[in-house]
Image 1 (cartoon, each protein chain N blue to C red):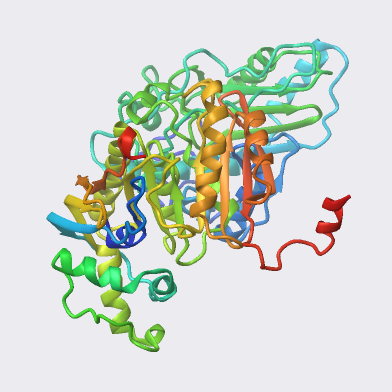
Image 2 (cartoon, each protein chain N blue to C red; image 1 turned 180 degrees about the vertical axis):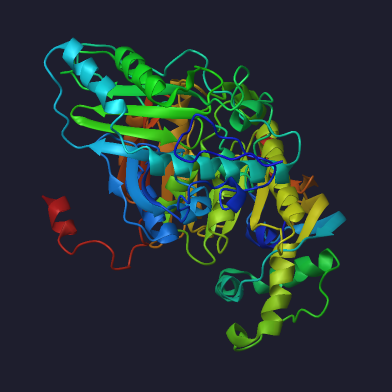
Length: 491
Length: 123
């Protein structure tokens, strides 16, 4: 039996079976359900905003704007394109923008400011963003059904409204970059096992009490030193007004709608989340202690622009995150994942096998990927000299893996051996490391082998790291250095 | 281990100067399906040691009718490129070993992973 949905009144929203929003029986009052255009927001690894913008341009044909609030981009999208958006690989989380204030005028007193925020709730253009939110749920459900019964959805954090920062001094919220968060949008290529809880219930009917009443929470991220209020207070008061307006039920843990209130100095953005923030630290032990986020792996790969027939190696592959991401997105290159550790190579092979199985299940064409795994010592690579086009890796951070002292010995031998196997002139390396001092010193001793081309500063779980793009210096006799260099050396 | 990988691997045991190509002994071989990209194959060919590839294909029993010499104008020969594609990317050694042609040292292959780690005294 089909129950009518009141399209503008989001208090009651009930979906029956496979029927979609387009189903005429779910419409009422002739409300036009054609595609709507909305502004989308996406969080991306800090430092890779341009990379994400490029991907958006390529895959959606939309121009993205990079927010002053680092780690965010915005772009226009038709709700028709929603499935495409979920295929973006440089994006961590997606939300629909309800309203953006480029220069919001905060009142001086806390009371007045909070009152303003409360008044805002009923005046915002919620309709289209919530349409997209609904459509997104329909898409999610379809994917879950295809995957089968044992899919789980990550349970959002249970410690209340996700706080920005404390009041007072200039503070910014660090983008917490979890290793390998669950990304419900990327089902097909998702090689993470679902060990999370079974929590599908709340997305569908959204209530234990009154059937059909949506549950929501407000997450406020605040950055800036001139605000008279805390993110907690803003979330609380704005949330209260939202509750009044929609008659939704507030629930910090099992919510259907997550309203985002992002305040960065005078920039205020209100949005509705389409993906869940996940804090999947428990998955780390399954995938290795320092598994790299696939969005970061994607960003690093984009930096080196894999070309047709490029031989790309990750000599410290860990669980194989980088080569696997490469083999999925840039299939025209060849990926060699290598590590000296037994567990690492086994995990890599398992991850690759997992993806192969998924692709076989989908049954659309050849499922094999151009990727292979070798167990090796990266200081003595069993590869022919000048046989590799790109070296891309996440180098051990002194604190989490290995030790700072070991890095002093490791980095120079690493760089030297990598230089040996890398093709002079055309070869490149993209290296992620937190041990910037050690790396810089090791690199300075290799002026003849590597040239620094570009550096991207990123934030990995609160630690500041650098992604260094290096070019392999051409062999002597090749015209690659400026003519006046020898003169400078003589002086 | 795919044969494209094998084409790049070399023995690096101390003192060895002719550690390439490694001789394959395969006890389990598998063939998978990888999407054919003619550009990939034709641009990869110049980076390969052709004779080593042919020898490797023979050692794993998948030489079929792969020519021992590179065909001229192979870039436009789709039939040829498809044969090369198969041998480079689709044939995989799951179990077996690689032997250094000079020192005789064997590197085991298990679950498709060649273990190229050296002992202290070999490095």
